[in-house]
Image (tube, rainbow, N blue to C red; front, side, top):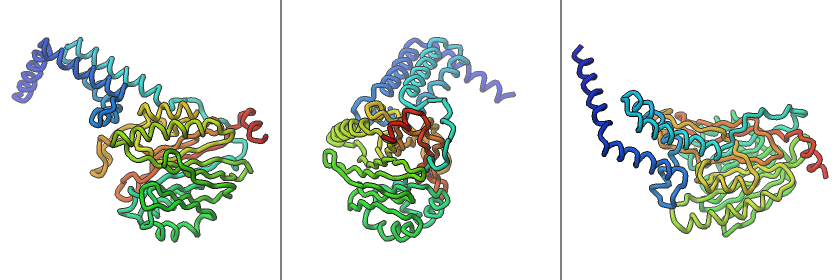
Length: 339
């Protein structure tokens, strides 16, 4: 009984505090300011970190809105709920929220899977994570941050599993290695403002080709990196938009899906995001509530995404992502790929 009385006293105190005009104005200012930061994403490191937590902030504003309603503070409740709704609309426009089901598969040979792994995520338990990657068994396997220290282990393990390997070895983080069971029709590496981009043309079992573009971007920690990234993504978007065949773009881009840079890139390149949703959580002690995904698989209009999921490795730590795709069966697509 005493606990109930104490709880009631605390609740009554909170109600009185929430009626204080100065506190209301302070909370309204903070809520509105943080919401604007999430939407406009100022080029300041700490403010960009805040915008990376947009999903978490949205949920927090929603909880605050419900709490203020219970405290009978209508003004604060409305502000929090409206801010939550504004962030919902922002994420909706920045994401792939298509609810349409993929087209019916006409031919199983038009389907393929691709998995992407950053070796900085698997290096601590490489042998254990190899077993999990082998269970995933993708048709196309992409490793990034591929440096000489991983060459012998990666090649020695996968050269007997996959019939083709394309290796781009570097001592820095730009190194890449791609394994595939599909024939490689063409391969090249080109530079965009001194940042390497790996491109492959693969022939899937039904005889048609898929263009794979793989790129790694350094985290935008300095002004120079930020400017370089803008130039790279702008030119790369123009290049991808001209493709008249299925394109898969994969990489560790070090931007969250809802970042304005990524939204602009996908719009200019006519790409869709395979990741339709993201929900922050504490899976275990190795994962932070403030974690946000920066590895992505994008695809163009010639493809349907059938499935997308993250891959957890040793101790349930995320080590990569996997997507399943099919060449869609629109008549215009078939026509354009056969010309």
